[in-house]
Picture: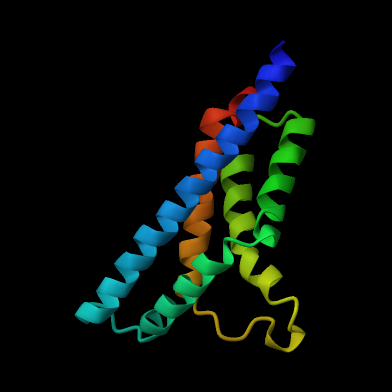
Length: 141
């Protein structure tokens, strides 16, 4: 009976982590856009990063963006890893890898065009999503 409960709980935890990740991307992206428009930051890359963040939000709806977090959870569940560091760090890495996966179709544009702000926002969102998953399901793996 415990296995059935676990199988039902994992998708809920994944959904909660995904919603947290998207919320952090929206909030941090919006904050960076507002800071750039208010002129508080001398970094002009932030304004162009706003369009990158919006594009990445649209790309998050694709199936290939689910692969890294799902693989992280599968490895964590099979290996029975309970470490917060594994889920938080892995969440940040798995979400930050998404731009690289999205650019695999065009190898010539592999690392061109994304500002550091986009990497920061995505990694931070992944850390938050990993923490939420660990709190809900990862610590009881």
